[in-house]
Image 1 (cartoon, each protein chain N blue to C red):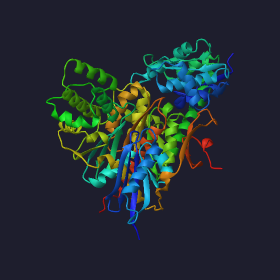
Image 2: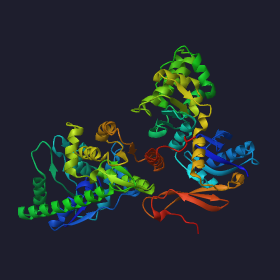
Image 3: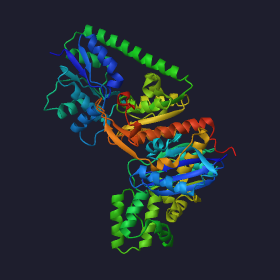
Image 4: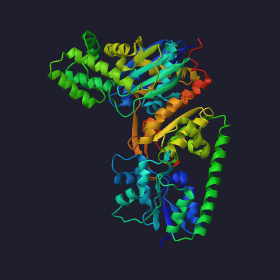
Length: 318
Length: 312
């Protein structure tokens, strides 16, 4: 008999992550790529990549889960047993690998969050609201302006003797501040260090406002790969900040762990990666709310729909 | 000649609507309420409002528009509050003027009454003035007011009773804390309550707690806070915080009093999970759904004692 394996997919606005784990929580396969505004396509690519790394002779996937902003869509696409929000997924993933963690800092492409943990369970959280200032998207756009790859930011920032003060409350202001600093001849590495510091400061003053940050602290999300931001967090907080090598996969890992714990087992086939999926947005005209209902079709057949505020808008398969 | 009085289903109608309706009907008038809020009403209201005003006020304008042509006068009271520590926000202090000015082209007839914390007055006196304006005798008015008070009291008692029974429930109990016109508006709080109930939680409301007890408790929360509705809200939240599994503070952007009070309230609700949600016209429910789901997860996994991922 084949050994059991569990699939987790985290579909964010910027990147899509996938992992397969066994019942001891070991990573059997992992993948990280850009969503590029097309969660269905990104998921298919993730599945293809995972399938290549996966030993289908030894293992079989018995349960799957999805998280992230496109979790519903991809959940109905792959027939996931568990579809859960990213706060819970990250909390589960992180506490599985780091049972002692008390604070989880997370900065992703367009969102950032803080999760406070007590006795291995999340007790409080906060997410950024409308504004994406200080997230990965902000750093990418500033990198572009400076003509530097965002991946190099951390290394460059560490070389700076000091950080140039940059107002990062708002991307628009930060950009004009940055141009000003460049014009007055401020060295690039100091500006980059300043941006990293601004990201950390902005996060602590907005998302983490009013939350008690207790060690051990784990920092994850795409921006955690930036050593400059990590250093600034450590300086601001006065405590070590841990970055897990798999930090960018923590949501996918967490949802895979939840899929495993659901004990809801069903055969999974990688064939979905080659099927055609279409989504259609329908405006419901049954009342004045005009809900936008999302319909998902597999091979032309409606498999799921959501977005209706009331039962009048429920779409049923003929 | 006024025969039918229109009551916009917004702002204080969610708190005092029963009293108003019973009073007018007791005097022999017919009352019409605008329908429940939906997107169209909000869009209509937004088109007539300035950008900076709050979401509930924009909604209110939409409700006033719903009543045009359906009544002889729209009831828009000017309420300043009865005491300096139990005032209303400036929007209420200016309500009839705002409505008259915004709809000056339509020339809608407004029925109004005015009271303020700096004049020494009581609710009964205010209703006496309102009834006199409508051409009724003192005797008729007193009778109608007494009758309306009784009806209001029965309505409140009913809500309080139903809510105290809900406190015995075995389900996850979430207290929604906020202004009544945010909590019970079908397009604002109603939507959040629907999400909570869909997740199998029981929903309780701060305005279904006995008003007098809540108001009294609020003076322990703050002696100087000037707003009546925030008093009833914080007092009720303090009374119920240990009887529920979580408190969801709901505010509609931008609310001045809430901006000051809710921060303080969060700090006083230390021993219970709290979610602070701010609604605005732009965001859909996708973001709120994720936030509410995360909040319910926090409550439930905490009760279960963990995620079950650390037994090894």
